[in-house]
Image (cartoon, rainbow, N blue to C red; front, side, top):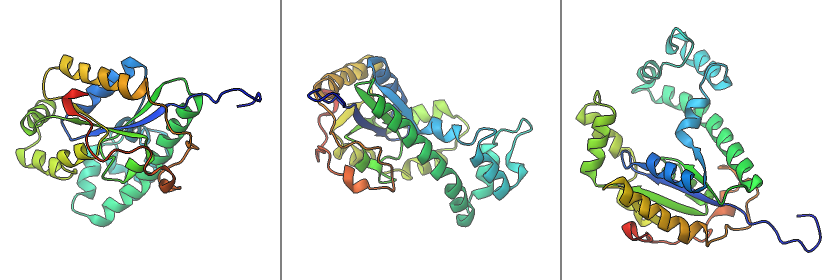
Length: 245
């Protein structure tokens, strides 16, 4: 900061919020937002970058044809899914178009929030934090858990058209939730009622956000730049405490 002896402003804590499918991560993200965090939703950004008028959507149409569009010009995700299902080359082409667009927008948004410093924490709500190797890019990892039966019930309620086989396939595609929890700083047990979850979130917020300052090394790093610069930023190797947080 300019001004000689002025003390550097406290940098927001960058939290990677993740969990298993059906664990209720979005509910925890909303609770953190109500406490004052800025939330960057990876799923929302993935939808944004393929909206009408976005370069990524134009590239998808060029690669897969106009049949992936609805009559109103929006992306028909089911049609695109059918186009790439079982075709590794098509899937890689899809990822090569969408993933760079998602990464750029995500890190532009996170970088702007970190630089502005208006929030005590920036929460990156991302389902596949570990699976894509992005855990090195955050200060802390918070994992939302719930028993397998509870998660399956939520998924059936959310999308009753999914077959049991498809539900199992989606769960199997992610890292086991127990392994994620073992590598977290904070574990939130979201298997019960929301008030119990809220108490855990508020306790973790007080302990980790209001009392812990982020590292001073944020320089707008992005996945693929220098992730090693962000590795080991205060990481604990074990889960901090499930429902006790």
